[in-house]
Amino acid sequence: MLVSLNGETKEIKSDLLCNALTELGYEDEGFAVAVNGEFVPRPTYNEYFLSEKDEIDVVAPIAGG
Amino acid sequence: MNTNKLTIYGQEFDNRLLIGSALYPSPAVMKEAVQASGAQIITLSLRRQMAHSGEASGQSINSQAEQQAIWQYIQEMGLQLLPNTAGCKTVKEAITLSEMSRELFKTDWVKLEVVGDDYNLQPDPIQTVEAAAELIKRGFKVLPYTTDDLVICQRLLDAGCEVLMPWGAPIGTGQGLLNKYNLNAIRERITHVPLIVDAGIGAPSQACEAMEMGFDAVLLNTAVAKAQNPVGMATAFRSAIEGGRLAYESGLMLKRQTASASTPTIGMPFWHQS
Image (cartoon, rainbow over all chains, first blue to last red; front, side, top):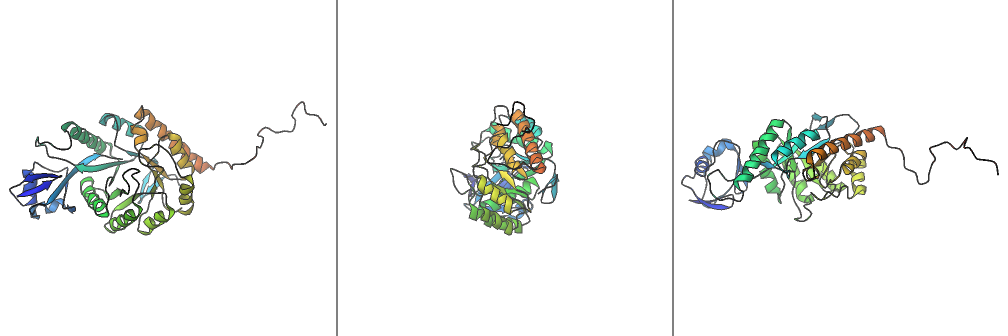
């Protein structure tokens, strides 16, 4: 199915978030996730199901003022 | 507040300079400058990151590596993290980013920024108050970046904030304390919480002046990162803020309109009754 990852369209096989993140290349920790503007806590990645056209944001630490 | 330590949400700090981690020439310079500043609180943020899958993304591999180095150094320094919600334009964005920050950075502290204008990057006062109230309800320790509006500051306190961060000038402008009347009013009327001047500082003299006015701390980034010598400038700011605080605690002399000689007039030679 097609979803948006950080603004780019991506094709993923699994609709389970933890698997989708692995497919998309995200491993281990060091990032946080929101879907359609809503925060998804890490402990729920293995029970969160994505839908077609969901907008996923994956963020990581950067410098800031 | 007339105590030796800066207390924010129950935590005590000796140093009254809060520093940002952005815009330095390199991660190594960032680390050295932060250490030279003596800052015990550092701001940082979150942005989209593509996985290391070799696919094209908005961020180059090099800059991603740089951000990772910066994050690595920040963790090594063991400072209190103050993640910001810079760039957020809505209450919802600020709340979602705060939640992501709390999970990743493992702190309830958040520097709340909700942008109201793309040119002066000023806080949206109305949305900042709304976001602050919701974040406080969710257990966050909110340090709100706000305009120098006394009433908005009061509303932020009503919403549960225990610290306020009014701006000196728009972010990155280096203009200093643009509206001293407003800043003074806030300091005089709000005495029971720490007030931190945040944004727009350019020179150590400006930070010193904020401290002389009785502000509890100063938060800055560009002033150090974009100096010719960031490490030297960090040291300069450290001294200026310490000096300003000591001056405030020592009680400045009163200003006069007319001159008052320091040297006594009695015994002046060459004087005679005319």
